Image (cartoon, rainbow, N blue to C red):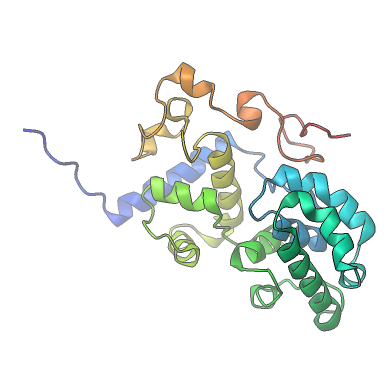
Length: 258
C-alpha cells in the first residue's frame, strides 16, 4: 500500500522557495523589467499601459506617446481623443487615457511634476495599484517591492508557497519568505520564468531547470524534446519583448527594433 506524501513543513517550504530563487538567479542573471523606459515617469506610464496586453505592444506604442507628451505637464494637457488614438493598440484605451490624464494631473498638481518614491503616494494616483507601484519603486527608485502579476501569482501557487488568490495576500506571504533585499529581483526572475518556461496552459516541465523543486511537476509536457519546443523568448532562441533591451540582455531585441 502506497503511503500518502508527507506534508511539507513551513520551514521546509521556505528552504525550498529560497533554493528556487537561487537557481532562478543562475538561469536568469539578466532578469529585468521588460518595458522600455528612461525615467520614473515613463516606467509609470508604461506599466499602466501594460494591463491586459504584452510588454512588446507597450514598447511599440510608448515612443510616439512620449514624443507627444514627454512630461507629466504635457500629458495632463493632452486632448483625450488624440491620446486615445496613440495608445489604442494597447487595448482598453479609453480607460487607460483617463488614468494617464488623471495621474499626470496629480503629478503636476501634487508632486511638482515628479513621480513620488513612496508606495503610499503612488497608490493614490489614478490607475495605480500596488503592482504598478512596486514595479516603479523597485526599478526606478531601488526600493524593494514584490510585483504580483498573473505570472507571479500562478507560479507561487504551483510551487505551493501559498494558495492565496488575492494579490495583496500573495505579496504579504511571499514577503515573509524572503529578505527584503531579494524582493525586486525575485519578482523579475519569477515573471521571466512564467513567460519563458512555466506557461499558464502548457508549462514546459521537461525543459524546466527547477523541476526537481516543483511539487506541480507533470502538469505540463514532461518529454524534454517536446517541452523544448514550448520555450519562449531567448530560452527558445526567439526575440524578447524590449525594443531597447539592456546591454547585458542575452537575447535578440524584439522584432522591429531599430
